[in-house]
Amino acid sequence: MDDQNAVAAENAGERIHAPVTAADVLRWLEEAAETVRSGEVDPEALIVLLGELREASTAFANASDWALLAAREAGASLRQIAPVFGKGYVRAPAARLEKLHREVLSSEQFIELMRRRAARV
Figure (cartoon, one colour):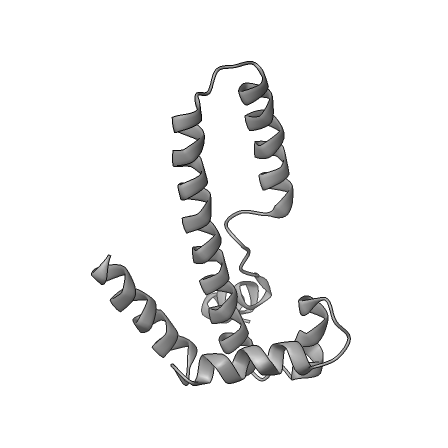
């Protein structure tokens, strides 16, 4: 195997990961709660934090929608995707895909839609 094929084979085995995990959030939450309990954070700062978290939540929901579209485009079946939705049946991802397809037909179109929405803000 030449160097180029070796690199391609190595890269094929790599996975992409979410930028933040549930464990990361729990660790942060525990630290933030301790800071709040100690009285180091005023109510205004918590309101700002609330806004930041709601924006992040929307961003992660959008990333999830993109991943759903991309998985289908890559050939994943609804049966393969369904367990990620916490259900053993395909109705949840199928309904989400149906809703997404009212606006976009591909993961690339979805990213473009997100760019346009971000530019309006």
